[in-house]
Length: 257
Image 1 (tube, helix red, strand yellow):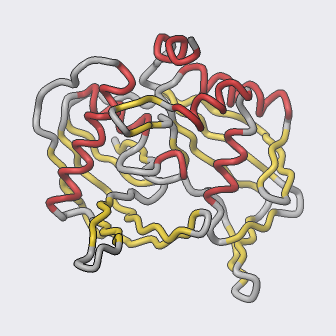
Image 2 (cartoon, one colour; image 1 turned 180 degrees about the vertical axis):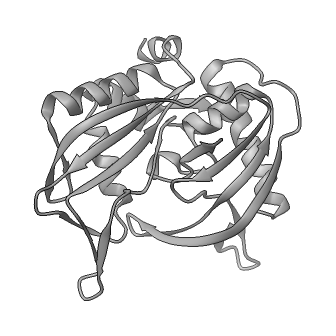
């Protein structure tokens, strides 16, 4: 029954900006995505966390968690000796989802608690901003708040698995971004998406980001993309994230005016 309730409470125009602070700053490892992910799951009810983590929204053999989050935004120093990031007293995090109950629980629980645990750090939740981010046309310029990941698993002649990552500008990058959005749409709304080819064009420079998530190396790209698609598809990309591994902190985007 939980999945039915969640689907009925979809909205498509909001995101959360979590404003955090710590008097003495915080220390985090360079590869901190799993720490943020754990904090998010711990800031919603156990029932919703279990549903998203264990089930999600199904499309054939795929499962989508329907949320994403940015890198931590704020000033920091890099401790090369300990491979740590030392964030100063104030910083923020964007969290996006098209699921009403997810956003409501996250905002309410964080505000009521007043703090959140990030690894070994207890940080203050100063404010939760609810931002209206609405796609108004069939063309949108998205900038990445966390790297976009697009990949295929292929086999070498010896049968060994190999992960092939694609970057903006690659034909496969465009194909997979479009296919991924259509699958997310079907899994969430239980109907066919608007039929129209999805156009993707990189604007300006791109930057490769290599991150480690729970021992696995993941390659993503930071950039600005011009995406052309039906408005409902663009809105879902803005809300749920672009590409793969969104709930691990990849593919979170913002829309440029």
